[in-house]
Image (cartoon, rainbow, N blue to C red):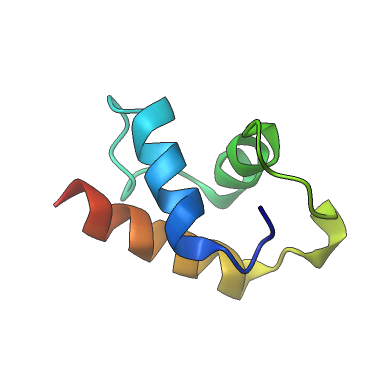
Length: 64
């Protein structure tokens, strides 16, 4: 997975952290959790605030 795979990242985060409210996660932790996903293999330097916002929004949709 790459940073651009926002929907897949959101699905995997939802599965990996079902007890977490995605509205309450900070971007530092979110980035660490994405990088820790088993299928993730992109450069952490390619991540920015917009990417994290998109991942968070997709995760919120996934939970709802």
